Image (cartoon, one colour):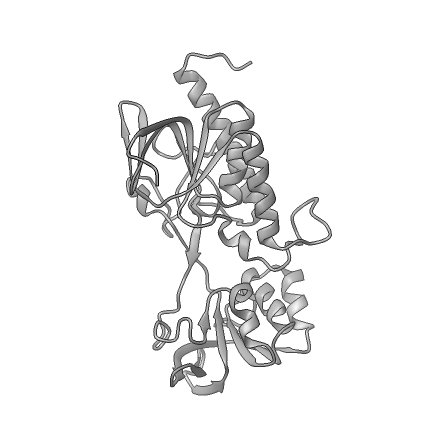
Length: 315
């Protein structure tokens, strides 16, 4: 366990997902003393990807956790420090950011928020009760428990379609339930789902109740047009209906209507020296490649900010 000493850095990055690790690589390579803090093992949503197939230059596809492990090693090879710790508070005092965890206090000249987003829940009856007992938010994590069984996937975006296709490699049949009349996923992603013989789709439907005894056995569906209710038997339900940005540590920052942090093109937030990158940031397209781009830009902007504070010329 670390002691209560203060640790000083040039840049502290909160979050060890693609955005955070990208920022760490660029800042450490620029000879900035860099610390990455993540309350978990790191990787964010990317660590759960079954096959990472759309990142430029990564081919054939690799599993998400393998790619993240490579990113960590790469950032550390340039000198970045990566630590597992839950941050309890952030303050800016006399031009320095003060980051506190349970047992350590860190300071830095600049800060990058790359805390990502977590899965949104449906809020339907029984969802909380059956979480971990048939209801899941991670197909890669829990899919193998449902081999040769029928499952449902709730959602209509890229994640829902991708995970449904993955689950079809394990399960007897996958029923995708979407509350609208067409998918909002990219055309190629949706077409891959629609052409899979092990997947069927229930459009204009929403899950309004999860039913079972000790484990999930069925879901109640409500037609979003007619209001008619029906019951579908299933062993598992995988929910992919959007994300909630993790901004609880940044309550004073400007955000959009959905709660995502607003930045400029340089990734700087409404507080000088505080930058945001990845899924926590307000933007129109959230992919791993855009998260990495955000992280690189945030790092570059932080470098310029820090050098100005130190009265150093950029050479």
